[in-house]
Image (cartoon, rainbow, N blue to C red; front, side, top):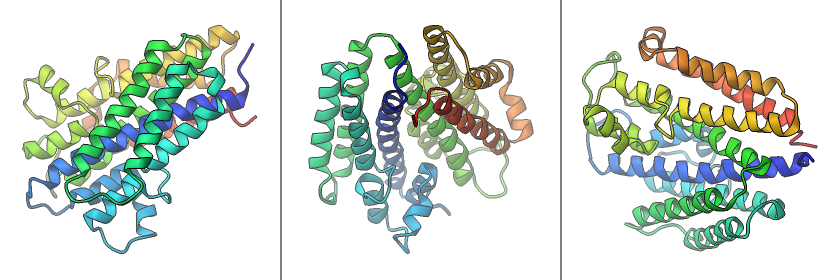
Length: 315
């Protein structure tokens, strides 16, 4: 029997917002690391964090400056920012409560405990020096949520809708960071492939939790073309676009087998997946990284809408 659309929607968005909270914590951690270097730059790193997170327009509606403490508070706990860590955990928990009977006890308790701890910790603005520990706390609890989910959930359609939420969100995050941070950090009048400060390239990799794994593959040498290849095409890197689409395609295939039919979302996912298998990083550089990612995001956003329509998320 097929899940009700509202149940599928709740599972999908529960996982999207758990992933979003962790992504925000990792993005802020990268911003903090770079801000502490005190390197001269035309672009304030905290400003670029806002842009990478896609919430600069919301921030500007409330603040006239780019004061780091205002940005940090906005990204951590502002209720007017639906992508803040606290808002994301609240939304994940609300969706989790709606689909409570579809979750194991361990998954629900992990989600609820994380919500309780983080709400308590973020009930007031942070004091100086507290940010690193709070970001570690967010990463710890979102990792616990993911761990209990993978360790206790039956691999059925419930798992597949959750998995879709995770990797739709993850691919969105990686593409946005690679696009926005690359062009914000790239010095004016310089081309792809120019020499660049290692700390700034490290910031891009840390934003998607890829710094250590990148050094294993490329022996710690920062080259723009290698970073682009790693974050787009490497199927072994768990936050790359290619890996995300292998997981999206697999979950959609399981749903097609479970329900005995397929939808436009299946064809869209397969087309995008094949593009990562057939294309090469040099083609991306030649055609323009921004243009490539803009085209990807248009297809990716269409896929998310097609999934919602196919499985009646709003029914």
